[in-house]
Image: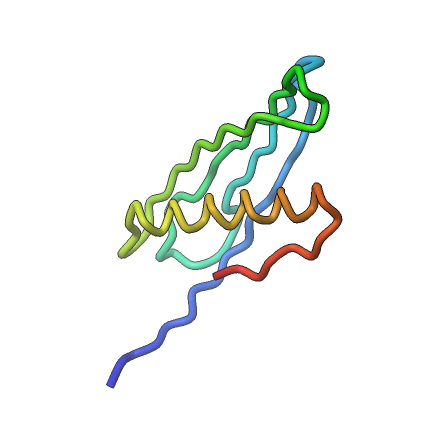
Length: 96
């Protein structure tokens, strides 16, 4: 038998233009389970010489009970997939 525990938290997202060719998206946990003591990150969106292409740079910080690098990679992949979907007018995929 496996014990199942639901962990809930809220993230706040902010977006802004830093320079003419750099936008920044930031998120951080603002409330929720004490199992997550820190969850925050940034996504830099840098324009390129191709107007149909943007460079994305992800930085994530996570301190949580039973957290692993694989959990962070899975979260970054989901955020990337959601940004690509939104850019192409597709539905945002559900969280894994």
